[in-house]
Length: 79
Ligand SMILES: [Zn+2]
Image (tube, rainbow, N blue to C red):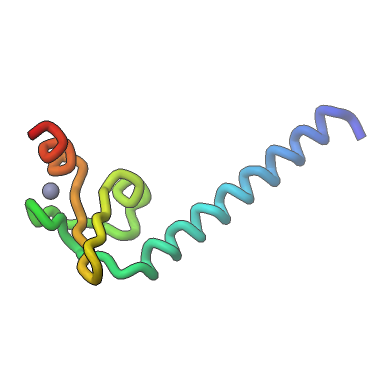
């Protein structure tokens, strides 16, 4: 097997793993109970949106979970 071919196969496998990890992440997110809106400005949080899931902050206070959108998070960090 040529090195070139090996590399190609490796890359394919990596891509597959990445896809799997993404799916797992999405499952994890949808399994955790989260509010549907930003707790401060009521902006809608789309649980299926990966970017949102990565950027929004979840603050847990006991049983209560607050969800903070990036812009509110920025504001609260500045003040
Ligand atoms: Zn907000």
